[in-house]
Image (cartoon, rainbow, N blue to C red; front, side, top):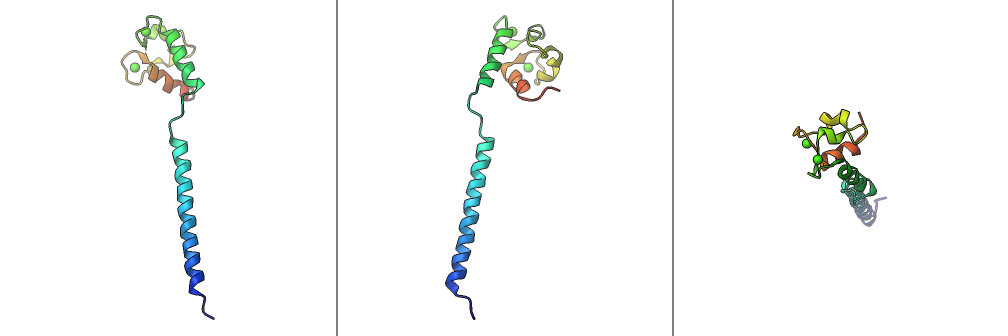
Length: 101
Ligand SMILES: [Ca+2]
Ligand SMILES: [Ca+2]
């Protein structure tokens, strides 16, 4: 007995539809996992700590100012990724968002 054409074409459509939906779902999951995080308390904490340590208010932490943040002075060279001799808020954020060591 021959298989009805309707069924096979319906099945093919279903498979395509399912594959398409899976791709959309995967794309959304991917977009969510890579989307920038909204401003969180963690970010606010970093800038608060930064501003407190930046005693002369020039927006950079010198080696001396870095000593106000526990554990930062000994990681100074690693945190100062652009090697300009000072730690910017961005450099501090990066350092604090990754595990120590
Ligand atoms: Ca400073
Ligand atoms: Ca720097």
